[in-house]
Length: 224
Image 1: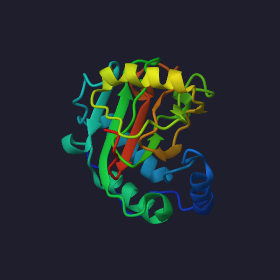
Image 2: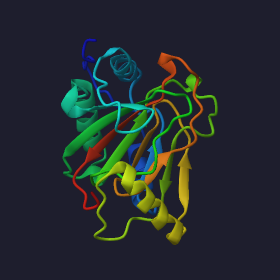
Image 3: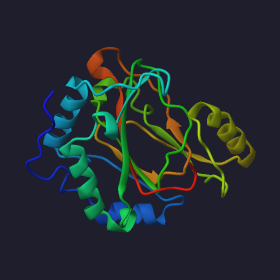
């Protein structure tokens, strides 16, 4: 598959940038989500790249998911331009944080999401590219974010082993959660250290209906 073309701006110029920045700043924990993230052309080109390329090499990191990362084929001009533009559009959120990692996950089964975890970074940008028609339940399919932050000086180093520790901690603290339903071209920005997971997933079968999410991580965190 040819790399996505980048001939113009890739982030929707009609986004209400001040509203997004204010929502993130005033929420506790810091979080914002919004729709129509990418331009129509950028979304089509990115989705085509993710459907047609052979970059999906990680079959074992998370059961039921294929994964791709910057260092093994995911890096392309379009994704790098998204990172560049979002930093310029939302400087109060991303400041001078460098882009440190990008990954994409593709669900192999219509009911398989991603378990509880945290990202290794300062700020995470998550967005979805699969059409809404593939999602059989528009009230779910997105992301659940736990509002209670991890304790200071807590270290996590293994996705599968850490899950039990995280669950025990969240059970003790009784923290609230925020559920953000799935929408094509919806973006979610949050502190990378916040524990999060996929909401209940119920997507149609078929290759083009696989749920694909992309996460961009900026900066470095103390958690992992």
